[in-house]
Amino acid sequence: MTTKKDPKNANPAADPSDIFAPVAPAADPAANPALDAAFAAETNAPAGTIDFGKLAADARANADARKAIEADANKHSGATGDNTPVDIETGEPVTSGFFMDLTKESDFELIAAGTRAVVSCVAAEAVLSGNGNPMLNLRVKIERVKGAPDMSKAPKYRNRSIKDRLMFIPANEETGSRGTIWRARLAFAAFDVPFDPQAFRTQADFMNWLHAKAELFIGSVADITIGVDDGTSGGTKAPQIDPNTGEAYPPKNTIAQYFKYNPVATSAPATSDLPF
Picture 1 (cartoon, rainbow, N blue to C red):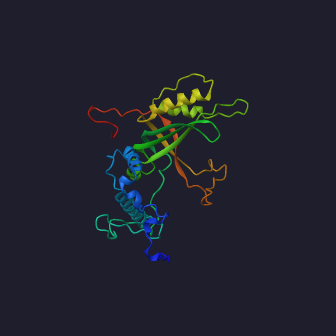
Picture 2 (tube, rainbow, N blue to C red; picture 1 turned 135 degrees about the vertical axis):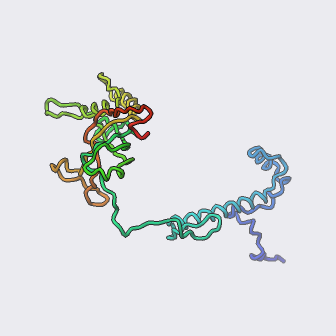
Picture 3 (tube, rainbow, N blue to C red; picture 1 turned 90 degrees about the vertical axis):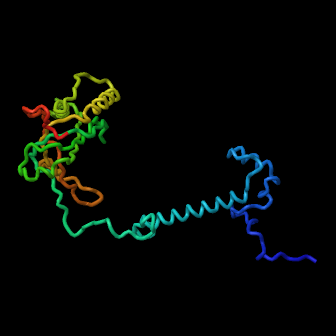
């Protein structure tokens, strides 16, 4: 007489879909010395002492821990709609130490056009524009305001950053275009970076030269006049539209003029015209 096996008493370890379940025959190292030796070779573990059951249990525990960590991270990253920060030690929601006021308009305003300032170059990068023209991107930081339409606002201008793009487009006698290299020359002179008079046969050679010059800009000091660009080129064209918002890009500060920095003479050598 054949007795049918009760499914309720089936060994769950025999389920091939459960990769973490220990398989009874392989749990005994002596029953599978080849597997034991191979595992020992891969893990530097002493042969004959591997507990496959413990390995499976550890793997399952690690997997459960990873799932718990991921669930907690998702909970507070917006994935589940709950962005409440939680104290790591207590696990309690954090309800203090954060403030965001959206009831007021931002009091940020552009630096007034015509402001004169001493700046230091904090970033310089030689790149190619979208049209393939060599370009030197600069970012300068205001160290001191020398003059402004309203000097009472000068303290707010300190440490503000302004970006500029120095394009290298030669003049064109046929079209009467002045090009842009003349402006790059002014910036080089203002920051006291040598502008070597030489010709380049390849764009690669020129870009190598420009990369080397970019390094010399960083940390250098110049004097500038600040302008405001609303994207209309002085009212001669329509402003450029931001495709993400459908509105015109907001005005931004620009560098209208470059001048060589001349420290103010002082009778006390220990003092410096610059704040650094």
